[in-house]
Image (cartoon, rainbow, N blue to C red; front, side, top):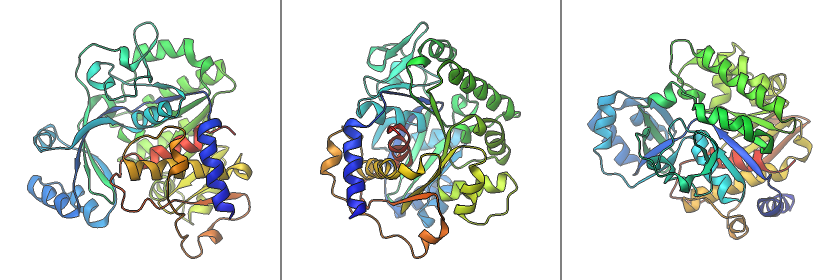
Length: 380
């Protein structure tokens, strides 16, 4: 009964309990999406020589890897199903705008070839101010990622200087100086793609931005969303340099283990890791396909926020798009049965909410990003 009440509260939260504005930085791109099944993904992997895709399809797990220019050219010759906005920042900004938030996005490139895939109201930087995405008419070269969505999860091939070098748009930096006082939440992500010789300098640059924003706007909450990192030194830099300047941090179970390794910690389970991370961020949240659990500041009242994250992810999986605020009330989905003993992994002070089953949903893209918008952009 309590679970049903939590999901009712969450649906109401999408209508009336969201913050008014949020910023999403730093990774945005255009996804070229091929939808297939495990057999089709394995055939593509064999034909083009993509062992990581092959492993993903066999295990039913997702991954993101940097590929050569030649390999990306071959992938882009494949028939695909759609082009859409991609990247953690891109997915989150679109969803937030669809829920009625004033949504700001960082994009290294601002041109019609990218902004046409954004919600019309998402605010993007121009030389002098933020403008709605629908007002951008210039043409330009955009970063393309090739996504193989094989149902159970997805594989992403990246060949993209803008995001692998994490080039921060100077117009964005200048415009956000003027706008940040009107922003209530900021989600920073995309560092998992960073692939430059000295990554700590770029992470320091973002830390300076975050501290400056928070100095100008004391009510701004900042959330760090992890991902699967290609380089341990980059992840270590993010956890040591940037994480302490953020108010909360989110990750899944594989990302938690990777972060533990990067910090040289002995892995003692998710609960112990979350306890350790509270020394870095005041609030931490672990989201999996079966449940989400929150610890630290706000955990005692976190049920509806976690449930909203699950609702948004289930809607995305089922419908393959962003919902409007009122559409969540009609979503038919049942809570997933929790694995045996999962509640014993987490002690006093943790808030645990089961995920929702989306059935045989057609979409595996952006589910974690959808969860993060619900969890972090709800009031509380």
